[in-house]
Length: 441
Image (tube, rainbow, N blue to C red; front, side, top):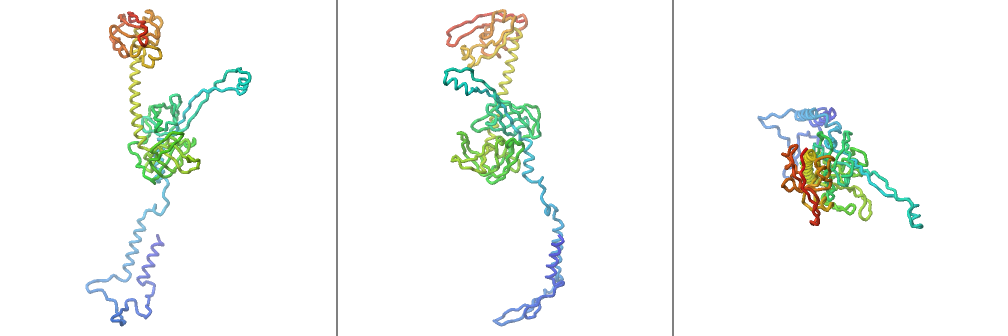
């Protein structure tokens, strides 16, 4: 600042004539005298003095005023303008700090059975025509690593379908950024979009990414990939959004309308979020193209599922989850009704679905299956056995456990109830029905 003020002062001193002799023209005339031409003849004219009634600033006063104003500007500049910016205030750092608590590492385990043979046994079978020992069966645990992120405070997570495929037989473990590990269960998935929906089995509130405010996905904007790259949690890579609406084929499966980025996407990043500098979702890391279809190595070709597709899929998955929750509540009511039939008569009941009817060879859409009979109960004493079907209670035909629950609601201990039980085969080929009267215990 002192050097800048000194430079301004020297410049003004030169203009005002302080400490510097006035410059002389080649003719020895003072600077206030100018030469002009009139009718081709040279003439010497003196510059005009200020008009009457006006006062000119003292010599050098204008430069002094300039130096004063410049000094005020320099003094009022914040120190940050002359110092290095604080890394903690960088947009990328702020965006990562905002999103990182929502990112999880997903570890799945699946046990598979494999049959293996000793090569020497194959040799004996080839030359002697028999096997001396049966093939051995071994169990193998397969693990899959990936990433995901929480989209709801209740613990709902979005990830790639290929990370948790066949998850009905999997053990899913989710590790949050603070190092806590939770069990999770699979809700729904879609192979076409390669998206899956899982939920943490915990009653707590989690930080989440809001899907109602997603990135505009502009070409050239900075994007950040967050995830579990090659097993290293909370890994960050940075690049730009290179293209949108890309179609690629991976393992003979075609994916459409993906966004492309040059940010590094490595194994383990699958299912993790791609965000912009505001922390908004750009997409979900999905695939990296290491080679072209012709086998030419590539670099900087990563692809992500757009945030719009993620948002639409999540809305669809949530509806599926609500529907399954309704079915679960219905199953709970079924269990309640079955327990009432068991308490009064010793029978455990189950709805007879079409698939179950076909498997047993029973007529479709008729009756309720008896799955167990308590020894010594009224049903057991009447000769009712497991596998029979209840077709009628009193004078009402029944097809669901809920109907039996309604009919038994007013029954008290000691009351007699008539049941029509037996087996009605498909096609009406055989009828083995009987009417029994049971006394509620």
